[in-house]
Length: 48
Image 1 (cartoon, helix red, strand yellow):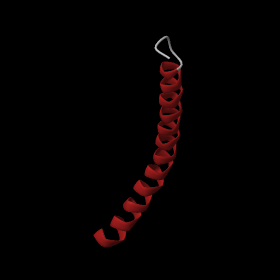
Image 2 (cartoon, rainbow, N blue to C red):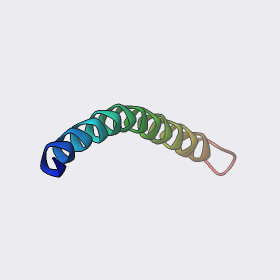
Image 3 (cartoon, one colour):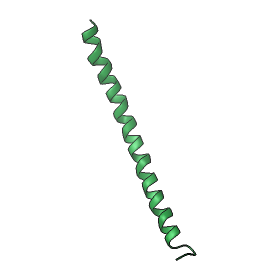
Image 4 (tube, one colour):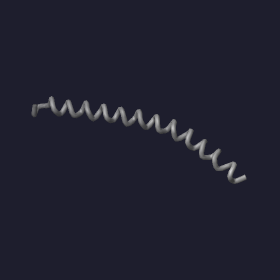
């Protein structure tokens, strides 16, 4: 019985994790774009 329950729980966790990973990846992408934009603003700032 324990063997039958373990894979089910793992599948459920993976399902939830994958959806969370997609959200995390999107947030990370936005952060990278923001960092690039900020870097350009700094490069084009008064020092440039």
